[in-house]
Image 1 (cartoon, protein in one colour):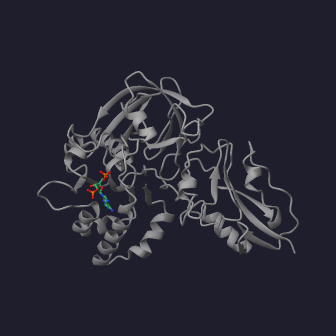
Image 2 (cartoon, rainbow, N blue to C red):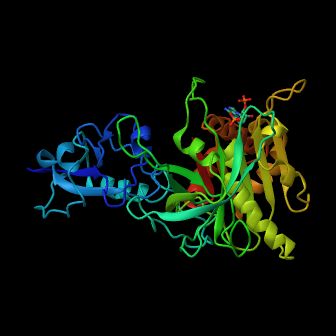
Length: 411
Ligand code: A2P
């Protein structure tokens, strides 16, 4: 009896070589050379951790193969396109990644998971606008012109965070709040290869950083150290932070079909972020602020935003000027001398009653963006806030995910 396996592959035509999948894979099944990213069928455990973070969807590629004929990585490295599905005799068994063995029902479950929740990309809100993706790739990037580069952090702050405005002239580059774009930094890496794509969330609304202009903004922190605090120079962030007005930038994308905002009247936004994770929140808030200024009635906006100090919090000035009836703002500072350290999850707990009231409302959409570490703390705060107010977060969470009402982007 032939064992048929579902081989996990990467589409070389769509892949932008951003390295996200290789960084995400917990079993080191993904590797690359200067040409392609590939998956070792003998190592892949079909955990799906890599599916959701992939900005282009190139990672969501599958072929049913006889288990003893899986495409070896050496062959995948030579591909320009994915091979078609080969004709197979009636499959008797379906195995995954050359290791586990699954029934056809499992395969259906896996396919469903890779498109909605549970490890795959969550669906967008039902009323989200339809996003354009993959309009520009590494071989045909859009060329944007820098029209502004402003420092958002205080002069004496420990970090340098910038608001960078890119103008697309007559090039078509439509984006929605919550989408990301890729930047191609010029030059070569230590191996003499072009730098891989760096991804940044768009910080401006769909109608432009300046309304009715074909431009967008990014919130970029200059990376000067790695996760362990050792000195390290971020290639993409330093390139962007050093740009001057008039400089040209190669841009790919846009990406993202899930972390999008609802558009129906009465929808509420519960936004939680730290540092530059504020970019998509700024885009969504600004979209709604323009509507609010035009007299449109809106649902509720509640924001929890964490930074070291007011001087390190991007958009601190403009945020504090927003009317209270427009947004319920909660700022958590962790390093203000003489004040206790506060994280966003501490404020979520303090506002537990209001948070639970929003979570109970089926028109509420939750967005979480920023440091990976806050994810667990926020989930715990949700659990407590729900428990104290007659809700069960463990039961609610999968519902929210399935309904496109819970979106998480952490790094
Ligand atoms: P901390 O002062 O402990 O680093 P950054 O400036 O590094 O981008 O961080 C943004 C904010 O997120 C800082 O206030 C930082 O506090 C805070 N932070 C760090 N770790 C966590 C965590 N696990 N949960 C929530 N907030 C965190």
